[in-house]
Image 1 (tube, rainbow, N blue to C red):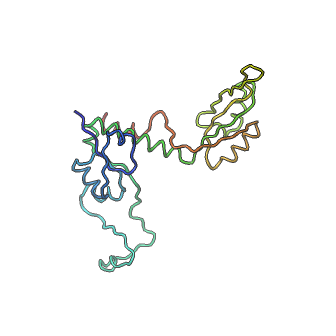
Image 2 (cartoon, one colour):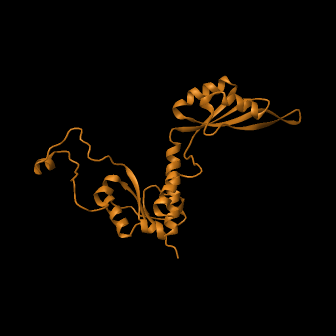
Image 3 (cartoon, rainbow, N blue to C red):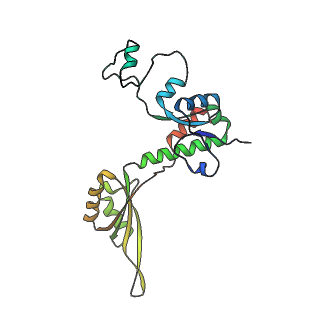
Length: 225
């Protein structure tokens, strides 16, 4: 019988709400240590902590954050201006045994990777919806694609806008949906106006999911799955 995966992270996902995920809040060093001991399956922690506690071999350097300078003086050390010992960022760590043995842990890992990558992919991108007159969807698409910055992820979505006139359902406008970079938003709006666009709506994006996240394929290869 598969066990419920245990993970330590601050951003909860749907699995936590449904009871498939147990979340622990731990000190950074304890996250790495408990993953090594098997008490945690997955975690998010700083790369510097992983380097310090991950392998626990010989110590090549001692790192400390100082403000008064007392630590440096007491240990006969000096500061190296501009010296970079390690560039750190948040990383996701996991127990290889848990990922190989627990289907639940692997499924949660898949969801985490999908959500994180999709969210990162959506940063700085907005959805733009506009109405445009035209005789056909193809004609409108041709006008939109004449502007390189309006092509979206794979191209514009063009849909008929139905209205009723003289008792008949007719199509005078088409709705177009595209994704553009936030920094190019006003330029894109100007280009839409130039080709007949109006009623422009703009929405922030939270996720952009592709067919599959590359990191998931890499992970499966590393695990031999």
